[in-house]
Length: 136
Image 1 (cartoon, helix red, strand yellow):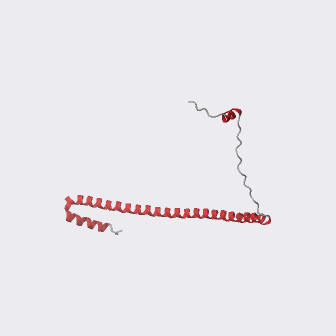
Image 2: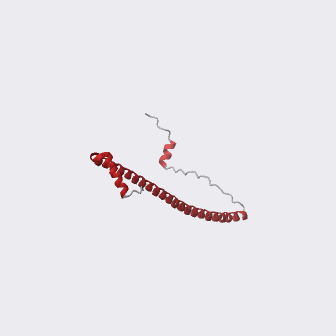
Image 3: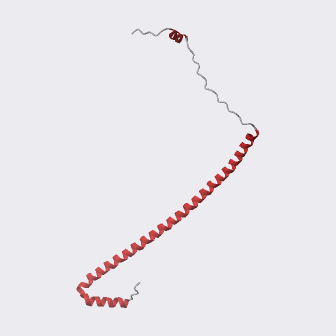
């Protein structure tokens, strides 16, 4: 990435030793190591998140294509069934029209509802002939 060799690192180490001194150099090196480690983790998290998003987008695209293929198959089969039904519909309609054209139209008679037959037994006849009892 930076294309730094061993000689360049040695020169940076000597300059840091001269500037910071032997007492503060270890704490500065630890802080620099933490900072570099944090930067590496951040870069790796970013790249892994980017990879996940790209894979998710690829999966969405594949699902979309698979769904379209499935819908196309269903649409084709439904259209085929409708075309076949229309063909049979024309055959049925043409068969129904031919006999109707040959014969006179039939008239339908509607049966009138029958009146219910009421049967009376002898007890009910007695009650109908006698006046009501109003003794209370």
